[in-house]
Image (cartoon, rainbow, N blue to C red; front, side, top):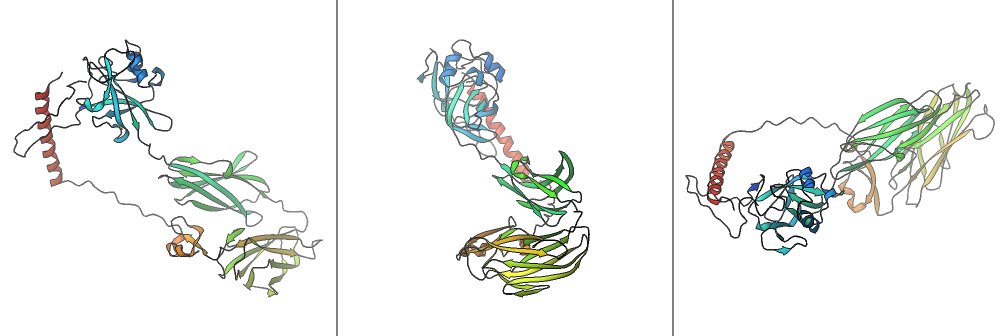
Length: 459
């Protein structure tokens, strides 16, 4: 150790106009120690130098006693070993209760060395700059003091949690023959943030469309229209603070049907815009129906029938009639490519376990067979002691206990709509009397440090 190994506390008093200056217990040594206490004479200022001097004399025996092999001296980070027993990197304590080896000093024996002893770092004169080694999980392994080459071990502190992000899921909902909704979800942990989403549509291995959405939410959706028939894939990439995240669960296939060369019809059914959702007991919600003529001729007298399973009660519709809880409506003429849309209001009057299906079918005399097409959507309800709410922080619909209902907002509330974050004005640095005071304190510390150096000398 350059300076001297402290066997007693040294106090330095300097009489000045502003008071008393005390010795800094964490004086930092960063220059080579070419003295009798250094394990590696004149130190190891780099990994290469430490590896080159590893086998000199009894160095290898000392390093092995501290669990350090020559090939592990790589990929190290700059840090400091302090006399209070801590090892720090970038200001963070990565180890405590540190021990080191010192030559020509009293302490625990080290096999293979006649001069080096194992001691606490509290017996150093100064804190030392060091090379610090971590394992693949970010946990402290050992350190080597740069000025003297002395090895250091200690009790590792838990490494800080690392931010992480992932693409959670992608679903594709068919809205019409040529229109689809892509629903994206991401997950983040320990400070990671979502910055947006990217949707790539691929056909025959080639990207045909790309859409990027800026968002800080954990979910997003995009309505996509593709008129060319064929099979497609859509790949979702979550754009996060930890980079771009995708995966197998974020790639889905969808098909745009050919316009048939004969009469054809297609019906689509959604509930609150999705194929399945959870609704509160005895609270109204809506089904959305879309009937499209996908054939090459106009269709006449298209009968649309909506039949829910027991548990769902149909309440109202824009057109048609509800009889015995079955809704019917006849479209007099449905032209080629034309779509008729309908909204049905319904509710689940009382709790019923499991999903409740609702099926819509269409039938026209112009197409043989019955029915010509059907589609369905499902709902379920929470248990009697639960309620469906919206989390305004994530815009997600979730189920919570009724006692926690006041911590959230009702589904469909404006608070759950994503809002743009206004730009934050940049703050200018403040100057004034505080800066002058800090400069005066700094000058005082320099006076004290200089006086201590002149008084202490080196061993």
